[in-house]
Length: 142
Image (tube, rainbow, N blue to C red):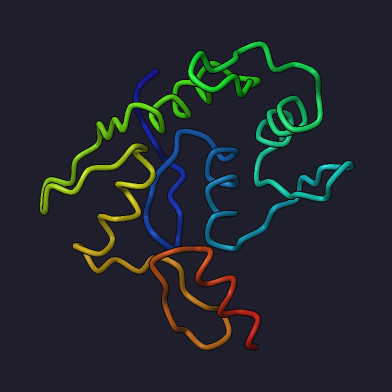
């Protein structure tokens, strides 16, 4: 393992060790979600996320109950994230303004407000967006 990351995203420059990682990442820019749940139709970028959804939402495999409220989860990590709703814990702090978040992904999304980064361009008109979801909503107008 050399740490080399020769596969770079043409849109944002993020680099990956393998082409598969780049392919999955590019779906964040395109909004592509090729893996669909046969039971409810919800779509996912990665097959692993579909598998987690199926086990948690439609399966009987929810062996991790919350001791506070009894809600059960398929994954221990999901239970841990849920538990923060009871404790109010917000371990991820913004270095610029001090605002705190429960999840690292929410902090990363917030940081875009400080950096002004808008890595999701519309292929139709060129307008850029900070969030892929906002780009997808915008694309409905074309």
